Amino acid sequence: MRVLVLGGDGYLGWPTAMHLSARGHEVAVVDNYLRRRLCRELDVEPLFEVPNLHDRVRLWEAISGHKVNLLIGDLIEWEFVVEVFSKFKPDAIIHYAEQPSAPYSMLNRRAATLTLQNNLLVTANVIFAVREFAPSAHIIKLGTMGEYGTPNIDIEEGWIDIQHKGRRERFLYPRQAGSLYHTTKIMDTDLLWFYVRMWNLAVTDLMQGPVYGLITEESTEDSRLLPFFNYDEIFGTVLNRFIVQAVAGYPLTVYGRGGQTRGYLNIKDTLSCVRLSLENPARKGELRIFNQFVETFSVKELAERVLKVGNSLGLGVRIQSVENPRKEAEEHYYNPEHTGLLEIGLKPHYLTDEIIAEMLEKVRLHQNAVQLHRICREVKWG
Image (tube, rainbow, N blue to C red):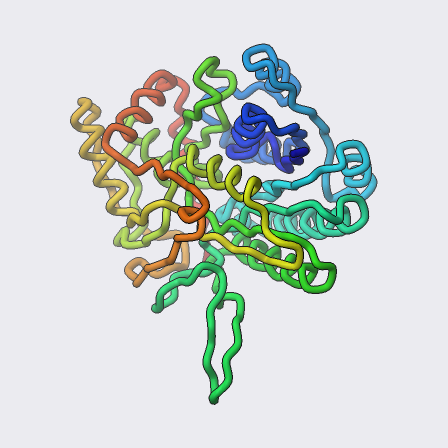
């Protein structure tokens, strides 16, 4: 298929582009380098330097023989969106092109406004472009399990059947975001559901949990193909942060009691989930929702796993509880369904001690690059 990867420079976007092109799809990536710019502005650069997309595309073609098309520009600008869709005419669109950080969205008014404008306008432009230029294309949008919050009932896979006063109906599962970023993801889902009904679009919405990991099958030949690896608390996911903290001799910072439980997955599984969704598309007029994670852990459990493995490697890891800067339940019920992706062929990678050790050893190679002042930035929800 002809696959357009929006946000193709990011932690997940670039690995997805390589993964799909290696499996025979014709891929184009689009990005405006927003994440790079925000990292520079906030002094939270990733652990190691990542080549720009021009260099990555050339390097990937030299190593693999697979060409990835490249378009640099801002998807908020309708004229650029028209150029992208007119040139490439996609069969499917993978939509990563959003400001991806909950803490960034809570930083200040400017960050909040940027998050709202970028995330919602890009999604709207994608919808309008599909209708005008690629009406048969399948939209795969990366959502987040954070849309659901932490309700005191089981979390269904996107939809819930309600019986009320003798009548039944099926609704989107109730959602209660814990940050402005997660709120924009809810609004993405609502926009897509509206236009699925109005314009008969085909959409898969992947409610993804926090991703961890660094190495993918496609990046083993050259470390310059590795994705961004942020370790700060603005753009770095929790397990990736803990890995760097362990290597740097910095205490693993657990927010409050550490009972915050989420569904996690290896970056390799993100690539599989996206590919499986692409190759088993939603029907026209369907908003299909998958809960995209493999297993659940509390923050405290993750810290204890890293502590155990890190100390077996002689790292002297320690855990420190810090005041929680977020407004969230620190102990709660959490039981989400996640069968849809397994049913279409996902073969999960589980978080083993060996995986943690592999991540620690990989990060150790860049130990001297760790800047301790970048780890904790004290972004407060209140």
